[in-house]
Image 1 (cartoon, rainbow, N blue to C red):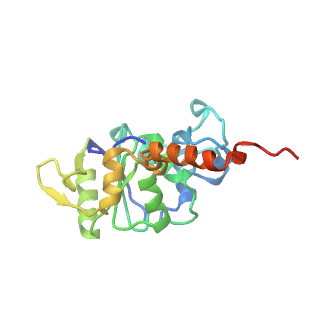
Image 2: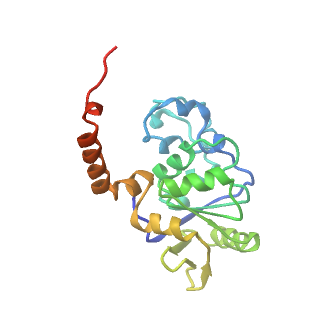
Length: 216
């Protein structure tokens, strides 16, 4: 998992409440058993005028010119600004995968659905909860200034506005540790690889029959 330490990026505004995971990555794209390739179909039903199916060439699609991510001023955005209850609906882990693979590293909103919130941390995406009034101010600033950027300093737990004003945010210590070091659940386990190997060696020494596979 990619480490998250300091991020400076363009902010794209998703000015809708209750954005659910089927809007983030529609159900037809969940057929893939891979963890890659979902970025091109992020917000597919809003982003394109035609219906999308897995494996389609994005160049053959009809982009919706009114959708925020298709507007030139938000190209290359790495921070998504959203309204309350972002990520509600089904628990599909494909939603943070799609956001990350599109290029987003952080999502700022007044509130998140619990499962989506947890899945973000497990996949290297930082969800930041801020008061609704603060989020509203950021929406106004993004609209007023093309190319609006924020800097997110995870170590210090602050968001820095272009003028230098800092906005503090909370993040649970263990989740912060994992993001700073790029540890997902597998990475955390592999830190103990020497102990795991030693345990397996001892187990096979005392119970050698476990090394044999039974064939029916």
